[in-house]
Amino acid sequence: MPTRRKLSSALRRAVAARSGHRCSYCRSPAWAGVAMVMDHIIPLAAGGASDSTNLCLACYRCNEFKGARTEARDPLSGDVTPLFNPNSQEWHNHPCTHSSSASMA
Image 1 (cartoon, helix red, strand yellow):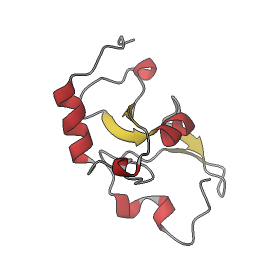
Image 2 (cartoon, rainbow, N blue to C red; image 1 turned 60 degrees about the vertical axis):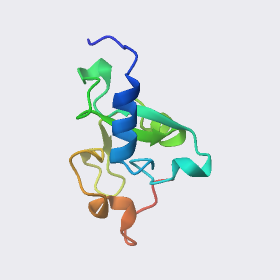
Image 3 (tube, one colour; image 1 turned 90 degrees about the vertical axis):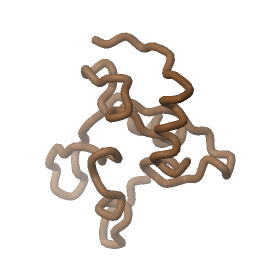
Image 4 (cartoon, one colour; image 1 turned 180 degrees about the vertical axis):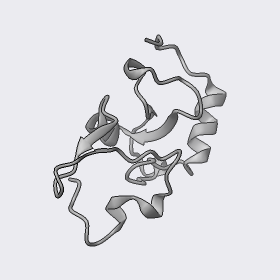
C-alpha cells in the first residue's frame, strides 16, 4: 500500500486550478468559505497514487461522504457501479445534473 506523504504546494495548486477552485463532486466554490481537501479518487489503501491523475479538489463534506469507496450500489437498479471520477468523466454527464435522477443527499 502506498504511504501517505505530504503533497507539494505546486501539486495542490495545480489540482485546485484544474477544478476551477471548486469541489470536483458537488461544484461548491472554495471562495465561498467551503473547506476543501485533496481527495485520492482511488484511495491509497486501494493502491491509488498521490499524483495529479488520481487527485481532485473536494469539499470536506463530499470527501467524508465518499470515504475510501470507489463504487456503490445504485439505489434504482441495485447494481454495483463505479463512483463518478472527476478526472476521467465529464461533469455534464454526472448523475446529479439530471433532473430525472434520484437525489444523492
